[in-house]
Length: 131
Length: 138
Figure 1 (cartoon, each protein chain N blue to C red):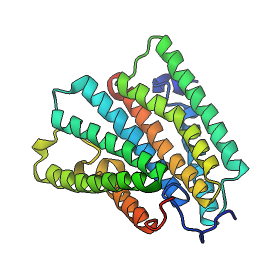
Figure 2 (cartoon, rainbow over the protein chains, first blue to last red; figure 1 turned 180 degrees about the horizontal axis):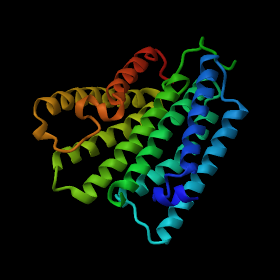
Figure 3 (cartoon, chains in turn brown, purple; figure 1 turned 45 degrees about the vertical axis):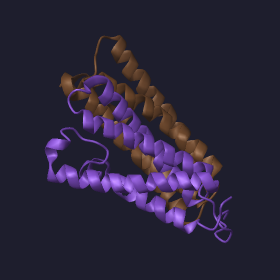
Figure 4 (spheres, rainbow over the protein chains, first blue to last red; figure 1 turned 180 degrees about the vertical axis):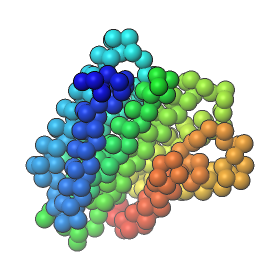
């Protein structure tokens, strides 16, 4: 509790870390599937769904912080990244559904590798001025 | 298991779909970056920001071209990948030779180093993919 308060940025907590870890695990899992010539399996889609829920929760946390008067360092970039972020799992989902081959798994892998980068950028755009 | 491999692929299936996915990701990245730069600080580096916008447009059109497949789609994708390759090489060289020219980052500065050099690899993969699927127009 205390650490969350001292960190300051609402997008810095355990939730953001969880999305990064989950995304990387999912990337690894789908990479294995792609290498083994496997189409996206149920677990990948469940993983994408869980990831999306976590990202939406992260977005809500950020919006609540905004409602409470906190401001990101670069508002424009922050909202850009936030909107992009919540769109990524659905994008992977739709494309993976369209491609029921190993390449569908490769798509899930690619998106799940990009996602942590966007989360980190999101955190950076919050911190610029606030820190 | 559903990986056929024997039937001739179109530009919008199999590996092509992965390519389209990456193009979409870059279209989003470049578009939002350009939009933000043009909207908030156009005066600082108009050349760099207009270039970002051009890159964004090319990524979008390339993704659409690959996704549409067919003759016209392939033409469009071929043009986009070529312009992209020339762009990333040209801007890469220029940004190293004369950093003054690009005071702010673009997608293509330093051969796309800010984006893990994927902007450099992407058009090459696109051209290779177009070459591999050259006998299938639908």
